[in-house]
Length: 75
Image (cartoon, rainbow, N blue to C red):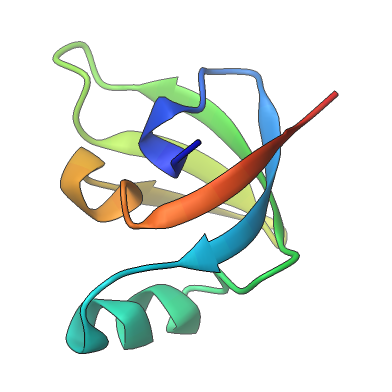
């Protein structure tokens, strides 16, 4: 599944990044690396952006950015 499909109050682990080079570097600078645990906190009323919690901080991404991050759902 991709990060934009993760529902609020659910957790996942990053398994892969498939973004174009410029966006890929930006996502990696945010800490989205393979193996990173991430939690979906909430979505804006229109569904965009989406707030995530990872590595002790909050990160908001647009859906079109989050779809480049592959995650494995965690219990």
